[in-house]
Length: 235
Length: 235
Image 1: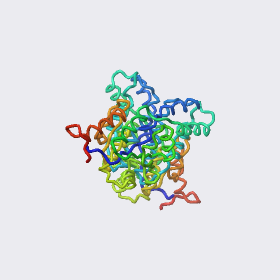
Image 2: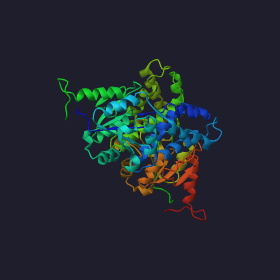
Image 3: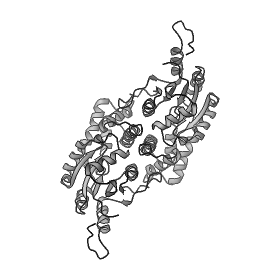
């Protein structure tokens, strides 16, 4: 692939490290493993709305799913306090260790960087600023302005329109195979960040690139935009 | 509501009791609670394909998700054996206690009964036969013949076409709020079976009826098709 004009980053789990959310469940007397079921169920319900031609706000769905999952959990004394405590965790997440160096390295490739999240732009702004990488991003986008969640095609189309480039000049970067699949169907190039060495599901379109972290992606893009003699290509 | 012409039942969790799946995870050295995350993630990925305009087979997605979830689980000695053992569980599920009496009671309302599953028709056939209620169902339908999973509108439209009735003469019965929401958007009436007394999420369209089991639904339909003097309405 030629160097992309725009690199589009997913936010939740791709940039943010959601591991501390498990601790928030434990704080409230619920099993920490429930965090995995909670995040999967939040995406399940947001994607259900997308499949049915509708949409909702991430925080509304995430807290509603939490209320359902924690109902009847005998360890939880105060349901609404538990929901608030877990949701508050989104405001305090940090980024994965490779982000602080990886984002500047990707910015040095000359590509424009943007984010596109199923969550709110506010949460992403806070995350990127706290991590000291906000200045590398041209835009912080949310599907709230697209009317449908990723992986609905219109969500990616929204990013392409706002950035005024064709989807085939964009590279979507995500840890989630469903995001890689949706972006590919919408005409974007894709890179899968596989920090956990999990198998890539065969029922989703394969990524154009698989990397273990953002630094490896930056090296890969550097190599691909360098000609045989080592000189930088400008195309 | 007038008595529906056709009652459409979801299968997984609505008729089948999936609680024993947790035990299958434990058999293979994985936490039994992982069953909840697994089923939510399977729906997440199937709905992602639906939102992106594509589809896949339930068994393919369920086993792929399982492979991802169990990778790196230190308790699991043989990954493929564990995947097989859990997937085999689908073939041995039973129905919820209210199904054996509830289905004949709903058949006595005079409505035609069909199932519509995101899973295969084979699994549903086996489940209903083993429970002794197969003869009450006119058809056992799968979204495999619709080209998209529920809650995509075309999945419900497929059932309406096959049954040759308008969606507004059909009643979708499900434990899953996402199914109630999708069916409602596709023009069907809806009944939510709430066996666990969980809150209904406000971001989904509300059901027309909420019942705690299938027997209560049969009573409700009996009452609604009976006039003030107790006589049966024929409309």
